[in-house]
Structures are given as C-alpha cells and as structure tokens.
Amino acid sequence: MNKRYVNLIIIIISVLIAVILIGTIAIQPLEEPSGKFFRINGKSSTINIIFVSWLGCPIGASLSWPLYFALLKYGNLSYYEWHSDPNDVYPDTPGLIFKGYFSNTINATFIYLYNETLTGNQNNETINGNLVSYGLSELKSELPCNYYKIIKKYTTIDWISGSLFESSADSVSPHHINTVLLISGPNGSYFLNGALYNPGNISIYGDNYLLKYGDKIKFIRSAEENILEHISMVE
Image 1 (cartoon, rainbow, N blue to C red):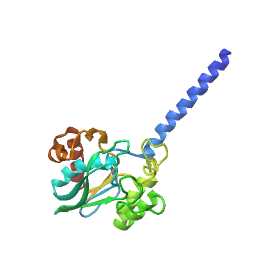
Image 2: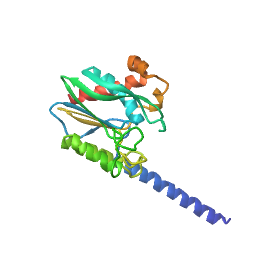
Image 3: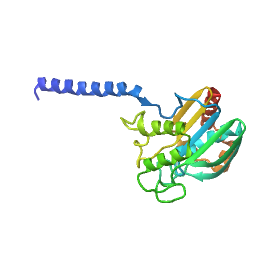
C-alpha cells in the first residue's frame, strides 16, 4: 500500500479516536454519578429516607444490608429475608425486604415496584404497559410530589454515568425503574443511583450470618458508614 495512504489512514483513525475521547470527556459533566451519593436540590423539615427497588434486584439486595444496619441506629425495622432473581447477572443475592420502620428521628419509606423476575408487580399481578411507566405511576401515587419528581428526574430523564446518553432506567434491560436511595433533611438532600459495592461480594454468605455479622464485613461496614455520614449531613 502506498505510504501516503497508510499515513492518511493513520491520521483519520487518530482523529476519530481523539473525537471519541474528547466527546466522552465533554459529556461527563452532563451525566449523573452512579454508585455514589451526590448532592441534589431540596430539603425537608424532618429526615426522610426513601428506598426504591424491586423484589428481584441484586443491587437492592446488596444495599439492604448497610441500610439495615444504619437504620437500626435510629429505630426498629420489620423485614423478611429474600434472594434476588436466580437468573440475574448476580443470581440469588441475599437481601432483606423491608416492610416497615419505627423511629423517633427518621421517616423511612420502602417501595418495591416489581416482582422477582420483572414480569409483574410485587404481588405478581400483570403490569399493563411498559415497566418504566408503571413504576412512575406507582411512585407518583405513593410519594409526595417533590420526591416523585426527584426520582423521576434521576432515573428516567438525566443521563447516568457510563451509559452513553441514556437514563439509568433506559440503560438496563428490560427498561425499568432501578434501585435508588434518597436521603433528605433540614440541611439538604443526597441521592444514590446504583450499588455501593458489588452484589457478588455477598453471594458466599447466608442470611443468618449477614444478620448477625454483616456489619463486621468490611465492604458492608464501609457502605453503612457512608449512609450514616449522609444522614448526619442532612440533619
């Protein structure tokens, strides 16, 4: 091949790589973080924690443990033990499904939008329409307007980090409202979209072991401290 053409091809490839890299860097400020808390607009007169997930979600299962230990510091939880979708990328992740919470200092709301396999609602009833629309309608009916708008914005409108111009709900298959955690109080609000640690890390542990010793496991303890830190930041 003519050397001139070889050099031209090299230049074209180099330019394309540069454009891709620059474009990726340029859109990062427009994306919302994944897997870590970030500050958002809004505050509330009391401390409110809203946990949204679905019964088969391994991220929800993994997040239930640090949330459980964090909330025990402030009150009492009712829950039952559960495992995530056995056919998910992180199958049978052990977790807790929260049913209620009593505390003198924190209001906690737990919403599970879908069943274990994303084929129906949490009661295994058929969902009419797509999962995202159904999830939003449920959130709208169960949450105050300001919290509904926050979760809608950060799951279905804003781009999520690493998704290439997609919201977090659209970046998963099938599209659905994913697990999120919102912490709000007199001094501001913080939002978490995604996992605080890899759900696969707890697959080797049994439920009873996690209930007794989960807060001694390094990555769960770190995630618990992260949640507690953001609770204290909004107090």
